[in-house]
Length: 150
Image (cartoon, rainbow, N blue to C red):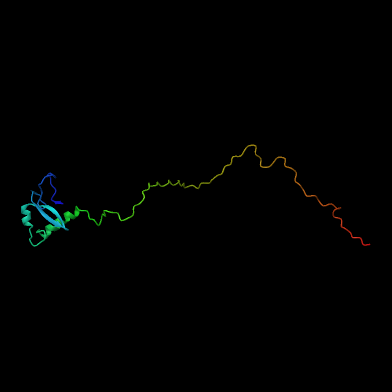
């Protein structure tokens, strides 16, 4: 990654703005952060000013913090965005639209059933047959049997 300040210089050129003072510079220093090499554009004066030979990148702590923040802000963190999904593949289904709910009125509705009735229809036959009655018992059938002894 190239580390430099934003400026109006062309992006395809080899001169960039110094990370510290924004002056145009072509001086590139290798900066190591998390075992990755980065190209740090810093002019000769700023490099002398922030030089610390006792540190890993030979740059003072305050400047190293700024550079590290610059790198972290512009680098994706692998633990936040896994490159491979850990879930099993899902079958794609078209989203179903929810049915439109019926309108609920504030007044109670009374359901009325209507029937189609023919004009000629009468519920009872006009001349029904006479009802059948069981035969009434006659006196002759009610006679008692007498046993004659003889």
